Image 1 (spheres, rainbow over the protein chains, first blue to last red):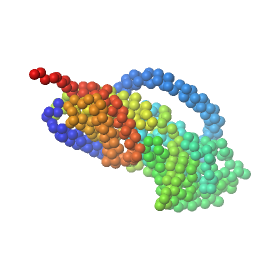
Image 2: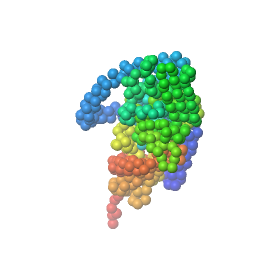
Image 3: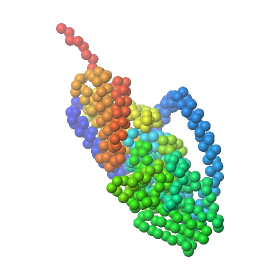
Image 4: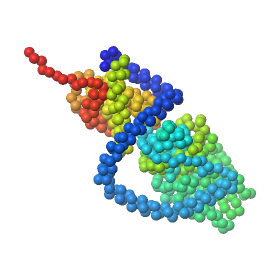
Length: 359
Length: 174
């Protein structure tokens, strides 16, 4: 077969062709995009056929090996549902109140963006890519760069789009980065329960633990709850003061009845691969040492260069460690979403600034 | 040149598509301790161990291209890594023209280790760093071990798809 070519020539040909293809793909050649699209269509029926063979075997095996585990998990989930039903009622009223406030102040939120529901249909086959494949594509209006969420918060962004399929780069991939913000109230420690990585927040960014507190301010109450991100720029009445320093903005909003002090720190959240928590790098490096505490909630910062609208919850800070010889601290964030068990997700039809999609 | 393209491609592509689907549906969905076993890589090194380093490189290139086209990696990255894997495994033919199963498995182990290590290295070269950590050695060892185990089973398939016939030895008659 290879009589015409020596071994070295074959190897050289393979290497050079690979380098050429990588260069073409990296430069965004449209032909390669079309080839991928055609290939996705070709592979789909073969995947379905293999799945048809593998699924009964897998189910039989799961039935034998995992029955007890599933039963235990089912009972635990029922308990969790009962617990969450109580929180749900309060969460709904809080979200309604939040929307009313946004409307009142003529502010926008991610609720103005439509979403497309999708199902996760495949994981990345490689050990060096944290991606999932979802069941919607360009024919449903999905585009490259759009953020993807599940019930618990942001899970990633779209990196490749085919007509009926898309590839989502997950938060934990080293290639993923998103501008993020931490809202904290100085002097007030976050709830101790929030140090648990599994703590969830509502889509409005309000932690469930906070929903049990009173959010209705009356003439006699003083609340120190963090405001939703959209509410931070409110110019309030005569007693309000605002202190801005670098990227860290300290807003003190006061009315005659309510005093809310919210410190907003912004930074870049980056994945570290596999199951490692994400790393938050602050724009103002000193802020991570002074204001940020374990348990604080991290959500998307939005803005012109943002890859997602403001206020989508991402996760909670699980570790703040001061680094030797550096003024900044190592801030680790654990995602709210359980990335290993994704099933139904939603693509937020928010088209980011093309210059922001780069990384 | 024509033989290279037309001969093995007719078998490589359909076999590669089925192997890729098995990888995507079965092995990607069932990682062992967060490590996804690489069925396509195992097939590549088996083809290399069965047919030699040049055939292994071509098998790795074609199956790697299919892998790239279906995933999120730049087209050519997995082709390069798997090409190296097939080539390394094929060096067993430098020692013996008809390797025993255990010798082929040893070379399949090293070939798969080279191929799996080459992926994050190639990603760094293309500007996608972040995967080279101390933990990748565990991944490489597990993936290479799986390829070594699968090699004797996949070698006949690898030989067939590369159009290689196993040599039959006859005693010399006086």
